Length: 351
Image (tube, rainbow, N blue to C red):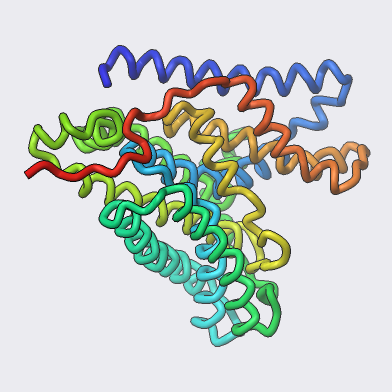
């Protein structure tokens, strides 16, 4: 992909994300909602937290698809991550007295376990050329069944007992900065870490040789192979990365900003893996645009709480649809997004 084309895509992504945010604000003004009460620092804090698990999974899925592999199993990997995070923290503490050290150790364990599962998934897709849609759906269905089952074995029910989450870390000097200090330097460290990951992912993808390899693996794998780069090795790395990121996104839900694993219904992940796919499509395969889209969906997810603070009470069955309505609006507004040319196509390295 040329530099000029990349810049055009970046501008288009930025315009799209900003346009969606402006449209939301305009809608609030049009329906005469008290915007000054609706858009508060507290609301932004909740939106950033809600965006974190979506953004992590979306950035991972973006890399996999950029390399030519559609990881539709993000939702399943998030379920496994949420379960493993809660289970490891609980087991390390012996069922009681969970500390911050236990939570961070569990977070690392999620990355390792997700990496192993994603490696098996990558072998299935790349070496054995399994149908990517079917295999991804299988991961989701297995997660839906295994999560509650494992929870029942560990805790006697489909959900874990209430667990603490990773504490906010305050940087006293920076926390005094108006608005931004409270949002980024007096909040969960996972929020700021995710932003750093998004920026780093953009730099790697668009400003490094490896990023060009990833893009070439999805656009023109034959040319990459001719240049002496192992296409399948690049794809293995991105699929494993996507599984790890989705697993960490699930762990954020259970021990990062949540209070344990919930296995009822479609589990506590509740469709965020699917929303993550829409987020990177809306973000035009750009990690920064993807984070902006995740923030939009996170804000819609938390809108119910903010409506209650200004005295507007709506049934939960209605407010629970807000993120999915936002997804539909985004899909209609974005229209066609050009996917990498070789997505879903196995590649046999030329000898």
